Amino acid sequence: MRVIIEKTAAQAELRTARIMADMIRSKPQAVLGLATGGTPVNVYQELVRQHQEEDLDFSGIKTFNLDEYVGLGPKHPQSFRFFMQENLFDHVNIDPAQTHVPDGRALDFDGHCRHYEQRIAEAGGIDLQLLGIGVDGHIAFNEPGSSLGSRTRLKTLAGETIRQNEKYFPEGEQVPRLALTMGVGTILESRSCLLLATGSHKASAIRSMVEGPVTAQITASALQLHREVTVIVDEAAGGWLERRDYYADVEACHQLLETGQLRALGIGN
Ligand code: PGA
Image (cartoon, rainbow, N blue to C red; front, side, top):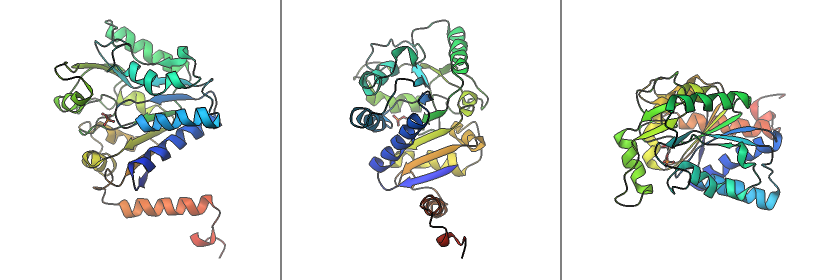
């Protein structure tokens, strides 16, 4: 796991967007896994800016979102399909037919989820999966206790998740209790993962994910088993990491390598 601690949330968001943009530029037919929630909003805003001002080209890109609330259609303002249209898809030159979000109105849950997995496989698998993390350590809607081998399926949301997400719903409107979500096993099959977390309310989950044991109680901890994960946090979200000095050291060495300052690394002295 590569852990990058940026000073501010804005810097963490920008770093995340740049990694995604680099993927789009280096592989114009890339398959991206996308996330919703408060965390990635500014990441998408930066990608839209790069599309508008720097010709970032989405025409060959395919996307698969992590999850969707059961019961909400694409026109519902709190549905994740609506979120994606508003925050990204409607503002870039992506082919709408190549954007995939689980269908919150599908009632054949098993069939729909199997089909979703099949579409990911047919696309050649996910090149880069963007992730957030819940305060309970979930990735996508894989709540504590989810099997680390789980696939896309119906999931009951934890009370903590429902409370966290209430702020996005108008007062008095019920937060859905069920979701369709990629499984931990599905996410682990992505060729690379990029997890962004900002704010002190994520500090405990980040610490457990990066430095705790691998456990189904913190499903994000399964990323320790993945061979290519980048975790980007601001100082608040990284505040509980015990080995943050080491992570900073790793970044400093990366910088020296990338800029060819080999002598500073003891190479060729
Ligand atoms: P948030 O959600 O970005 O709204 O904090 C993250 C998550 O639950 O995965």
